[in-house]
Image (cartoon, rainbow, N blue to C red; front, top):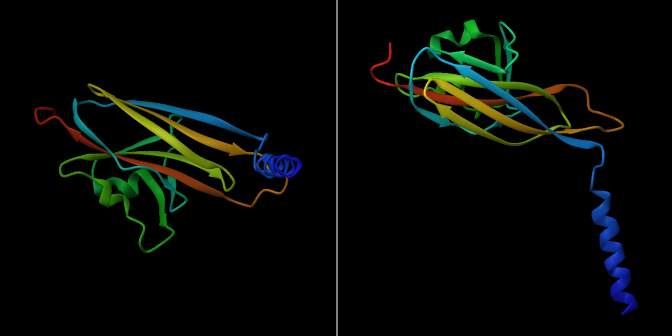
Length: 158
Protein backbone atom coordinates (compact mmCIF):
# COMPACT_ATOMS: atom_id res chain seq x y z
CA UNK A 1 0.00 0.00 0.00
CA UNK A 2 2.84 2.41 0.83
CA UNK A 3 4.37 1.66 -2.55
CA UNK A 4 1.11 2.56 -4.34
CA UNK A 5 0.85 5.82 -2.42
CA UNK A 6 4.45 6.68 -3.30
CA UNK A 7 3.74 6.03 -6.98
CA UNK A 8 0.56 8.11 -6.80
CA UNK A 9 2.45 11.01 -5.20
CA UNK A 10 5.20 10.74 -7.81
CA UNK A 11 2.65 10.77 -10.66
CA UNK A 12 0.83 13.76 -9.22
CA UNK A 13 4.13 15.61 -8.84
CA UNK A 14 5.11 14.88 -12.43
CA UNK A 15 1.69 15.91 -13.76
CA UNK A 16 1.74 19.03 -11.63
CA UNK A 17 5.00 20.11 -13.25
CA UNK A 18 3.22 20.53 -16.56
CA UNK A 19 0.53 22.80 -15.22
CA UNK A 20 1.36 26.36 -16.12
CA UNK A 21 -0.06 28.89 -13.67
CA UNK A 22 1.34 31.69 -15.87
CA UNK A 23 -0.86 30.94 -18.86
CA UNK A 24 -4.26 32.31 -19.66
CA UNK A 25 -6.83 31.83 -22.39
CA UNK A 26 -7.58 35.00 -24.32
CA UNK A 27 -10.51 35.46 -26.72
CA UNK A 28 -10.26 37.64 -29.79
CA UNK A 29 -13.62 38.54 -31.25
CA UNK A 30 -14.20 40.15 -34.59
CA UNK A 31 -17.15 40.99 -36.77
CA UNK A 32 -17.50 42.25 -40.31
CA UNK A 33 -20.59 43.43 -42.15
CA UNK A 34 -20.47 42.95 -45.90
CA UNK A 35 -22.42 44.83 -48.53
CA UNK A 36 -24.16 41.65 -49.66
CA UNK A 37 -25.93 38.61 -48.27
CA UNK A 38 -23.80 35.52 -47.78
CA UNK A 39 -24.93 32.09 -48.99
CA UNK A 40 -22.19 30.10 -47.27
CA UNK A 41 -18.93 30.38 -45.36
CA UNK A 42 -16.14 27.82 -45.53
CA UNK A 43 -14.11 27.31 -42.38
CA UNK A 44 -10.61 26.38 -43.55
CA UNK A 45 -9.27 25.82 -40.03
CA UNK A 46 -6.28 27.55 -38.45
CA UNK A 47 -2.84 27.86 -39.99
CA UNK A 48 -0.49 28.50 -37.06
CA UNK A 49 2.97 29.83 -37.86
CA UNK A 50 3.08 28.72 -41.50
CA UNK A 51 2.04 31.97 -43.18
CA UNK A 52 3.47 35.38 -42.29
CA UNK A 53 1.26 38.31 -43.29
CA UNK A 54 1.83 42.04 -42.98
CA UNK A 55 -1.39 43.92 -43.69
CA UNK A 56 -1.36 47.15 -45.68
CA UNK A 57 -3.68 48.68 -43.10
CA UNK A 58 -4.20 47.40 -39.54
CA UNK A 59 -7.67 46.18 -38.62
CA UNK A 60 -8.81 46.52 -34.99
CA UNK A 61 -11.01 43.45 -35.56
CA UNK A 62 -8.07 41.36 -36.89
CA UNK A 63 -10.18 40.68 -40.00
CA UNK A 64 -9.13 41.35 -43.60
CA UNK A 65 -11.47 40.99 -46.57
CA UNK A 66 -9.94 40.00 -49.91
CA UNK A 67 -12.51 40.31 -52.71
CA UNK A 68 -10.55 38.20 -55.24
CA UNK A 69 -7.13 36.53 -55.52
CA UNK A 70 -5.68 39.50 -57.44
CA UNK A 71 -6.32 41.75 -54.42
CA UNK A 72 -4.11 39.78 -51.99
CA UNK A 73 -1.14 42.06 -52.71
CA UNK A 74 -3.19 45.18 -52.03
CA UNK A 75 -4.56 43.89 -48.70
CA UNK A 76 -1.20 42.49 -47.50
CA UNK A 77 2.17 44.10 -48.10
CA UNK A 78 3.92 40.87 -47.28
CA UNK A 79 2.81 37.27 -47.76
CA UNK A 80 5.43 34.66 -46.88
CA UNK A 81 5.02 30.90 -46.61
CA UNK A 82 7.20 28.85 -44.24
CA UNK A 83 7.12 25.64 -46.26
CA UNK A 84 6.72 24.71 -49.90
CA UNK A 85 3.79 22.50 -48.92
CA UNK A 86 1.93 25.33 -47.16
CA UNK A 87 -1.26 26.14 -49.09
CA UNK A 88 -1.30 29.67 -50.49
CA UNK A 89 -4.08 32.13 -49.71
CA UNK A 90 -5.27 31.82 -53.31
CA UNK A 91 -6.11 28.17 -52.58
CA UNK A 92 -8.80 29.17 -50.07
CA UNK A 93 -11.02 31.13 -52.45
CA UNK A 94 -14.25 29.41 -53.42
CA UNK A 95 -15.31 29.74 -57.05
CA UNK A 96 -16.73 33.28 -57.49
CA UNK A 97 -16.14 33.82 -53.79
CA UNK A 98 -14.17 36.04 -51.47
CA UNK A 99 -11.77 35.41 -48.62
CA UNK A 100 -11.95 36.74 -45.08
CA UNK A 101 -8.68 36.35 -43.17
CA UNK A 102 -8.41 36.45 -39.40
CA UNK A 103 -4.84 37.44 -38.56
CA UNK A 104 -3.29 37.72 -35.13
CA UNK A 105 0.42 37.81 -34.34
CA UNK A 106 1.32 35.86 -31.22
CA UNK A 107 4.43 35.05 -29.22
CA UNK A 108 6.19 31.83 -30.17
CA UNK A 109 5.16 30.31 -26.82
CA UNK A 110 1.45 31.04 -27.35
CA UNK A 111 -0.89 28.40 -28.75
CA UNK A 112 -4.05 28.46 -30.82
CA UNK A 113 -6.84 26.59 -29.00
CA UNK A 114 -10.00 26.85 -31.09
CA UNK A 115 -12.31 29.18 -32.98
CA UNK A 116 -15.94 29.52 -33.89
CA UNK A 117 -17.50 31.33 -36.83
CA UNK A 118 -21.11 32.41 -37.20
CA UNK A 119 -23.05 33.86 -40.11
CA UNK A 120 -26.13 36.05 -39.88
CA UNK A 121 -27.27 37.46 -43.24
CA UNK A 122 -24.49 39.86 -44.26
CA UNK A 123 -22.55 39.65 -40.98
CA UNK A 124 -19.73 37.23 -40.14
CA UNK A 125 -18.52 36.91 -36.54
CA UNK A 126 -15.49 35.03 -35.26
CA UNK A 127 -14.27 34.14 -31.77
CA UNK A 128 -10.70 32.84 -31.50
CA UNK A 129 -9.20 31.36 -28.33
CA UNK A 130 -5.45 31.58 -27.81
CA UNK A 131 -3.46 30.40 -24.82
CA UNK A 132 -0.94 33.07 -23.88
CA UNK A 133 1.99 31.65 -21.93
CA UNK A 134 4.24 33.76 -19.74
CA UNK A 135 7.69 32.15 -19.57
CA UNK A 136 10.89 33.23 -17.87
CA UNK A 137 13.03 32.99 -21.01
CA UNK A 138 10.77 33.64 -24.01
CA UNK A 139 11.88 32.78 -27.50
CA UNK A 140 12.58 35.74 -29.76
CA UNK A 141 10.00 36.49 -32.41
CA UNK A 142 6.36 36.06 -33.21
CA UNK A 143 4.21 33.80 -35.34
CA UNK A 144 1.02 34.51 -37.23
CA UNK A 145 -2.23 32.79 -36.40
CA UNK A 146 -4.18 32.82 -39.66
CA UNK A 147 -7.72 31.58 -40.23
CA UNK A 148 -8.80 31.84 -43.89
CA UNK A 149 -12.58 31.86 -44.27
CA UNK A 150 -14.07 31.31 -47.70
CA UNK A 151 -17.16 33.41 -48.48
CA UNK A 152 -19.73 32.52 -51.09
CA UNK A 153 -22.14 35.43 -51.69
CA UNK A 154 -25.81 35.00 -52.59
CA UNK A 155 -26.34 34.81 -56.36
CA UNK A 156 -28.65 37.83 -56.45
CA UNK A 157 -26.30 40.06 -54.45
CA UNK A 158 -24.56 42.97 -56.22
